[in-house]
Every structure is written in C-alpha cells, then in structure tokens.
Length: 314
Image (cartoon, rainbow, N blue to C red; front, side, top):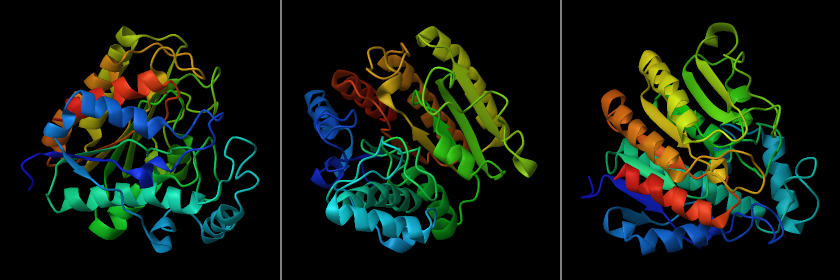
C-alpha cells in the first residue's frame, strides 16, 4: 500500500469531458478544483494519479452495444444531441467519456489490490445516463459501470451507492431498481422542483429489492441542519444493509449559489458525509470508498466543496 491511504486523479484527459463555454457543464470544472486542491496543499496528503481509459467491452458491462456505437459515431462529427437537448455531442466525446469511466475502474482496481483505501475523481459521477441513452449532461454512466465492473472483475456483489448531488441519481436507481444487492441511498432536491423529477420517498425498489433503496427528497432551500438530520437516516440504512464497497456521488450543485438548483448546503455538508462514509467504509468494507465529483455549476462551489471532500478522506 502507498504511504497515503487516498489517491486523487487529475489530468487533461479527465478535463476534456465538458461541453462548450456557454453550457452549464463547461470545460473549466477540473481546473478550478485543481487550483484549490494545490492552494490547500492537499497534494502533500494524497497520491496524484493520471486518468486511464477503458475498452468498449467494459463500457458494455452497463451500456448496450448499440448506444456505445452511437456515441462513437456522433463523437467523430461532434454534431447533434445524445438526448432531448441537454447533452450535445462534441468531437472526441467518446474518448473523453471513456477516460471518465476508465479512471473510476482504475481506482477500483487499485483499491481492490490494497494500494489505496479511498479515491477521489473530480470529473465523474455521471449518474443520469441510462443503459441505452444519454441524459442530463451524462454520456456514459461511470457509476453504473463501476457497479457492474466490481461484480464482473472483482466478484464484489453487495455495493452501496450514496448520492448527495442536488439531482436524483435516476440512471443508477432505475438501472438497479430490482437489484437487492445494490444498496442505494440518495439525498436530492425534491423532484417536484428539479430535473429529473424522480426519486420520491415511496420509491424503495422493486421485487426482491424492495427496501434496499432509500430516496430522501429535500425541500428547496434546505440547509446544512436539514442535511445533517436527513443524513442520520442514510447511516442507519447503510449499517442495516451492509456493503463490500461504497461509491459516493458528491455533486456540488447542492451547495448554496448553484445557478440551476435551489439547495443551500455549504461544503460542510459534503465534508460531513465524506468523513462519516470513510468511517463506515472502515467498519464495513476494509475502507473501500470512491468519491466521484458529480454535478456543480458554480466554480467557487466546485473548488471548495471537492477540496473539502478530499480533505475529509485523508
């Protein structure tokens, strides 16, 4: 194992995943985090690793073949949309999205080899893409691929997925809604007020998976106090069900001042969730925890929130 228990992935290959400057998911998100990361001297407490790509067979553990081929074709021309208007194609999109997924899978491999206990990947957590289609700025769903990769490559079946992005992680939820081994907990802005409009408290799983999914819709303008109260239910839920690996999607769009959501957390909410999940990972699954940056469209919020997540992991 490295002298540091945590690794962080930084590099141009991750930074390339983003859309035009006038798009909410613009090209500067990686850079603003990296600047704050170095300003806080966090590089002294973690190992910095370079992003990795992945082959198509791994993408197709989650996504269907026809969809992956469509992404490849639209990536060549860089025209049109992959969904109804949120996710525009861009030249090199297939390669950029493959690096997001590949980096998450590399982190899984290293944690399973006990090189690290925890990892943070800033440009990742693309939780809206479904198996057959893009959605909400997400081309490939690295979270969904991670679940399938853990199962197929490492024989890890029971996985906890925790999501504190302002938006409901619908691409993960509906892909594993009837899967009793995917323990799902999602704190998000109430779908009555925000895309994608899903994630009601009554959505607890289907069939054998009923009761293995926890959706907590939060009212608009919910603050840190509301988060801390709701978070207790997440911990109780994870302790009840257990897990052999924990995935955290820690989108910064639930921080006050985001231009497209209505939540009012500070970075302390994300720091608290990360600290508590790190402790739970130590208790449940040998420390195995990956945090993925997720959403966030206010650059100052991205910088301070993701830095707080990394600081909480070390």
